[in-house]
Length: 217
Image (cartoon, rainbow, N blue to C red; front, side, top):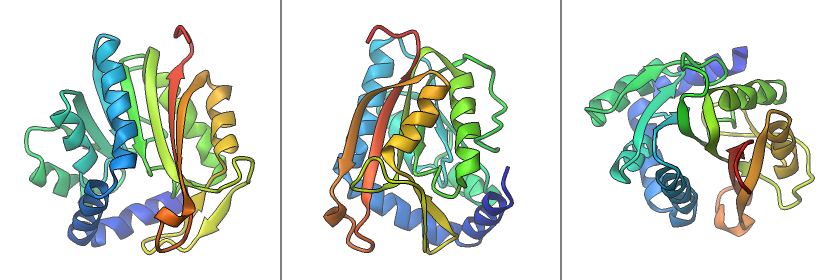
């Protein structure tokens, strides 16, 4: 993993309670963002079900939301502090400390992966590694939903921005899709939220639904 990612994990751990309250509130106030997670949950169920990983789960609010939707979800995050808090707040759900680019998960064993803004602290050279790892753990025809700060122009490159916790990256949609396609993850749908919905920075927010090759498209 990148040194920067380790530093970000430590920073989140130092403000775990504050961040957890903020993140849960923001998620609750974001029906559009939740809608793509709902689509993944329904798609997994329609395909026969199976375990779903919340990759970069943070304090576990998305994992708990998936469980409430009937999904067999568990979470992994690099921050020990956030994982401890997730276990406290969401008893009965499995949370583990781990690197989303080197998961301790059997290959081809997951029906789905949710990466809800968990790639934003990963530098560009790590994105290919992470996408390859998501593809490895997904079963054939498994689903991935990845959300991240983006650009109005899908062909835009990668830029850093002043995240309050640690330096972060926003990616062009085409850049992420290219890395995904290289490892057999095929776009199914996209939701790009207008910049005006981000009151602080005015960034577009991209939510991509992908499926591992082998599906009937």
